[in-house]
Length: 369
Ligand SMILES: [Zn+2]
Image: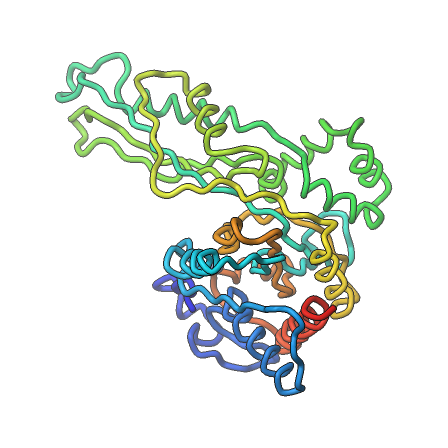
């Protein structure tokens, strides 16, 4: 089971050594305690407990643990899914990581929210390349250099983001949470036909909410030039896009070409890309079983559908699963989100036992009629 590394040099900032698994102060400490060893161990604890109690599911339950999720799952989840497909297995639903129980994170909503992921964003990276024959000595420069041309293209991309689209499952989330919101907010989100531009522009103001209403554009790498007095013959940049379910690799690429509007900038795909998986059904029996389980184990939390902005392994199962849900009931507050892939990753003992009880209850609810 893989985890992300601990950033070299950050080890001493951990209150407990990052790979110790220390149990102290009511927490289990270390890499993987939130993402995702917690899930593997809680599932195994739940299953062992049910087996010891003599539980026999009336339907088939597969436990699929990939070992390379953090690098997109090509040898783990992808191979598991293709083996199941070869065997003709059809899954009613998959449950993977993704959504969490958010404390004081959803604006305007006081109770904790159980964010059950029903969709996730797709992924695309594009390489922009500005080449020029007017390179060499910098003492006789052309009006526009390769670097200047590339900079212009990047500027146009950043100032012309992909259009916002307030759509399911984000609107489903608002509908479920509206009763908890303060009056003005509730009025706006429940009357979207009237207030849509207003709601959209409010959501755009914060990075955390802008990302759920549009395909994001992030320039992550740039290179060009080796010496102060030499004009480079090419400059390159990499741009990272997280694709909204209503967009696609083709629509994002078309937008980029149109906005850059410069035939001298070569645009090509960089590395692996994946289309956003289809949005799963929020009225299915399996979603209801999940929701019921959340209510039983986390009576303080409001379940709501959610768009996961990171990639999960569940995309590999799209072809064989009717629905894909993404939910791991770790409780996170504003102070905790940085622990995932960060420093001082930990889970409270109480939350860990809740996670185990959640899987026990879900198997009881979903694996027998
Ligand atoms: Zn991770």
